[in-house]
Length: 337
Image (cartoon, rainbow, N blue to C red; front, top):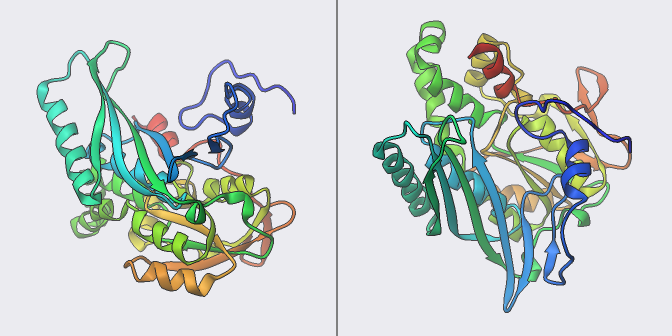
């Protein structure tokens, strides 16, 4: 692999080739306790502990400020659940700016407490400080969960021919962010009723319940759809399983209001941040779909795992899957704000 050198990194996720060279090749000392370590497309680590498996994951919230504490808890716990582990608690690091007031800290902690109560998990600790190193508040959550060996989800066990299911819909989180941050503009363009309905998408961010149901009913690999949207998540799942994906784009669920908001701002909904959606690879699609739908979540088949390069099937064409260089939300912010 050619050495990647960038004088200035783009906003959003670090490009995968650079991540491999600068981070994933530098993993410290090996430990027997590490069952699942860091790799592309894997968002949590699994460690052997007496009596079971501990799963841990960290995530920051930087692209949304309203309800950031609530969102951060659910996003971090989603990464735990896709490994088949039940979340038990979080550690919160809160970095405040020099202009922050005690109301900012209060809002973060109230939102974190509410989300933890939603999920039945504990706040285990963390760190809070005011620093000139940040220009806006930054929140970092580390989530911890537990499972046993039989329910631990390892993407490498997925096989050619396994069905790909999508829980939820594309751009759930991105729709909620845009409808909240640009409510006045969108209300004038689309009507207040549509905007208010999109703002309610925050309630769909958690995929803990459907992920745990899928883990119990036959999921082999799972990946929550976050930054970079469905297209990026499909690429990452392929990398994690060591296989390609073949997906029918027309089968990917999208809400009408999502399309309306994305059309207004000139955004691609399939490349827009999508917490609240979940990819599942399984050889038992009927059983998994039934289990997921019993949690109240929508679940549909959109494709399968294949040997060879990943392809998107759309309108009679087969296109090479190329993930976006960055999430549409970051591109929009950079151009608009």
